[in-house]
Image (cartoon, rainbow, N blue to C red; front, side, top):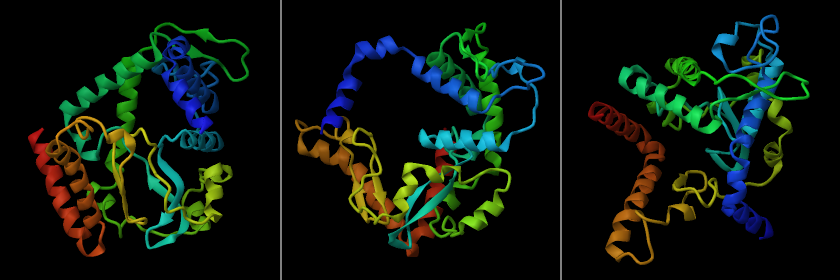
Length: 302
């Protein structure tokens, strides 16, 4: 309980948050640059985000693995995500789940729309500038002090990021990702290691989460933090979970008339019941087909 109180207090300490400014975020970016320098030692003395200061260099697979593992610990997807999950065909057993990394946009179809891509690139640039500011610290490995470069070219960096994400073309179709049979492909650790020889895929094995593998499945564990404004259905636990965060307007309020609450949170509940129905093998293919039609209709409407 004390940890919960401390967390709440730290989140409400606006004065300290304002004082910290963006330094914690800049520190994380710097850590990534130190772990996996985006530079060529023959042309640059320090890792940098500035595209004009970079050139092609040989990829260090060990450094790449370490960096991907670090991103995974932070809860950030990269090329893939790896976590301890429950076997969808044997809910009392645990397994390592290796999933396809998420994209910046909802699906690969969005990357084919020039209008959306223009908005996306501009938005990425604005977010980088808003979070990291006009300048960004650069520090070479082992350096004792931090120096500041000239204003970072966020537009050029945003362009780099969006162009890199064009690998979305190789990503799995949304309809297939929703198919519980197509996404169930058991493999041994040896088999996966053979599939990814250039990357130490199991650098993550020492992490705390992996120690859960030998623990019994906790059927009461929530997969979202309480403040999340969302709801989810868990097929392996056969339950719909409403984190406290979503029990607020416009979805719910204690002083609302019942009919408004039924309409607001009721729609959310109905959606999750539909998700539950679509998870049944006998209906999943039909639901995927319907979901694909909805996606196409929404894209055409946009």
